[in-house]
Amino acid sequence: MSTKEKVKKQIEEMDDQIGIWEAKIEKAKAEAKVQYKEKLASLKAKRNEVKAKYDELADSTEEKWEEAKDVFSSASESFKEGFNKLKSLFN
Image (cartoon, rainbow, N blue to C red; front, side, top):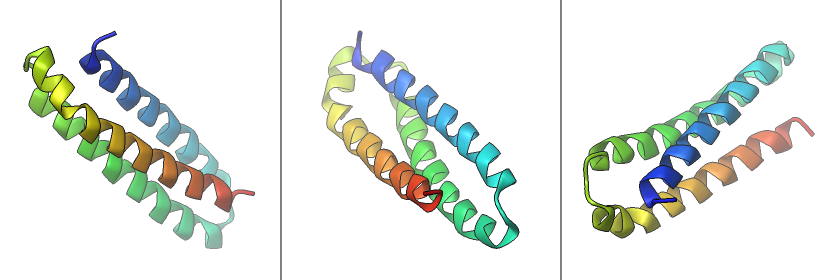
């Protein structure tokens, strides 16, 4: 699987996680919703950063994708950290 395909898959997984959390937040109590929505907004921003970089490189060579691999890896880790923080609020 090429780096481009891996990044696209990561973006799709981020979208799935955001959708799951949007549904959970809607079921939460009103006072907790504000905190959850702030964390979710942060996750969406991180996802949007990854998607923007993906779009920027969409037609690039595999070499360019390999050069950007660390950027995507870092962004993915940052998203996972934010996801785990949001998840901890529900425990």
